[in-house]
Length: 393
Length: 213
Image 1: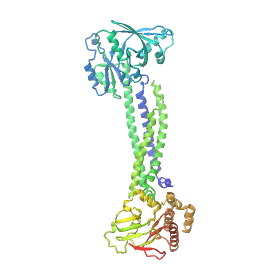
Image 2: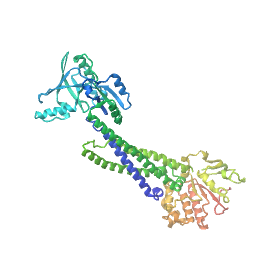
Image 3: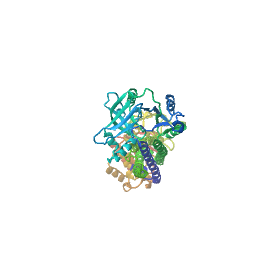
Image 4: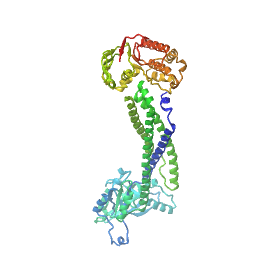
């Protein structure tokens, strides 16, 4: 009866248009939030180093090849780089002052030995397994992070021996030994692979081991810092790239391509995200404005209901319930459209060779109840305020 | 409910002289169950009094108390309680819902606090000559029929006092008598009183108290 009294004679076209606005805004918002999240995490799952990390060296030129130009970094220069607003942290990449070989240590595999080059970084630069990234003289195994280039090399070797190729998981189960040798002696260590990286071409070891081994087996001379590791701030890759170029610094090419790609796509999706928020807020305002219009169109009915004894909060709740239902329908439809859009976008990206995580992101699901709660809160405040105005008239 | 009016004068009437037997500017007490007739010419403030008692208007000087509580201290929840179960009103401008039927207009009231069964309401409607209008929208009923519907709606809720503002202005003599009879019966049933405002003196019903404005 109350529904008939308050909502039957309204212009349905207006509420339909407002609902379409909310539907479009919410579709864009959910879709852009989902892809913003998925693009940011793209490539991070298989990478043990934290996000936005570059290993940088000075550009190799003919002059640097003949030692005519500087190719190392001083501590002052590192501190100066760290001051840049788009850089999160910087550290010197420490290298070995002794000889290193990596060997397989299993009867099931053909013997394989290679000269290796080791470097070390602090655990702050690692995303996962940071707890395992430590070593002391009592440790039975040395944790290492293996460059993916090394897995490619190992598979080339396996193919040449007519053996099946190995995956990342299999490589971690192969027993390897590290042989180190210097002026002061030689040592064999069992190693444990805790992860893989595309960003660095050397085997990575904990800083504690590098300091220990350099002291015990290395040359007396302190090595020059020829590489630094930089963690840039999220979404500021453009500034970092410009800075590196202006200062004659170069990262690994693949790092640049991935970083640039993620930065551009993230920026584009961020623009869509902001536009979507504006669209959702606008459509929410349109719906709420229409609610106020309906309240004022029903001025006499609402006032009379209050005069015969209906509570203002009850009358307000009738309006908010009605418009929440309209908004909920828009949300439900928006989620359905998002789901179809997601399938299409993922398929399109896969054709282009980009495989994003296809599962629904938590944030895209959370944004629905959050928007709904926000709408109900603002709607309830607005409806109560307007009904109370009529009560006090 | 005991209604006390102490030196009450509506602001728009403050400049006008009021006699010693007027409600305005003097003290009057309406006891629970009293039948009070308020007689005044047009423009003397009958509807203003109804609206002040209903809590729609607050532009007056003096003090009005329901039992011992001043209505100036009432909060919205107090007014809701009063409108739902203590005071019932027949407004001069009726305040019906034109798009709803006779039945729906009454049910909107009884849905709040109950009171009278639908079968009893239909019986009363028959008595007041509205039996065939039960499912008719208020907007296509005559003024006299709308006035009777408004009286029915007011009687359908529980109350201690019913305030009737010129409730028979569009009724013929016979319908007025029927309406008065129903009001009297319902007041007796609830041990309630009424405050009836009219333009002219009336001898249709006996009152405990007569006041002028």
